[in-house]
Image 1 (tube, one colour):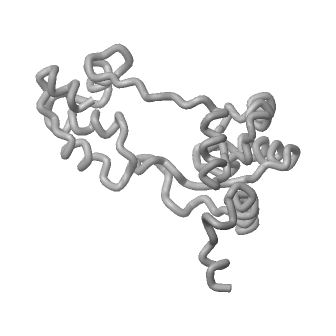
Image 2 (cartoon, one colour):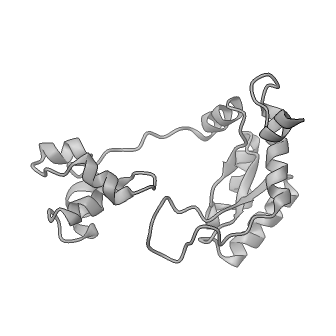
Image 3 (tube, one colour):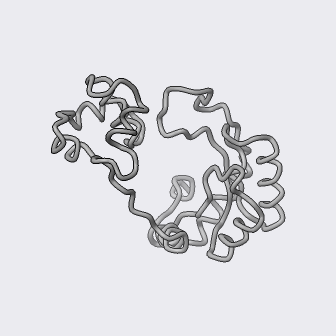
Length: 182
């Protein structure tokens, strides 16, 4: 995106984008903020409408990974595949389709979920014997009501994730720090 902007006459730098991202995962919103900070656009809307939105000069499509491939890669790496913050999209039909592909769990507790979302996802997880997870993840944004640590995740959810992950890890490749001490 930065290279495309530069080719289009906007001398924004990767350093400016990284400064906007701070410790967060770098993404399109940080490029937009760098454009605003540099005075090349008035606001975020103009950044997307003029440069970063679909079919605009600096639009770069994200590579997409098929769900089954992502689940396989996660399992091959010794991890558990959990659908992050599905919200309203976490319907029984969609969850069951992903379970058929090997999904291990769903994020139940998230600040973007309504109480109805959390209750539905929790019930689906129990019904399908799925792992439950939670968090306050928001990719490093500094705006909005989300604060790290506000979503409390029960210890048994974390323990269940670790136990399930152990099924995918070859014993000679990875050992937990606790197992290493015994």
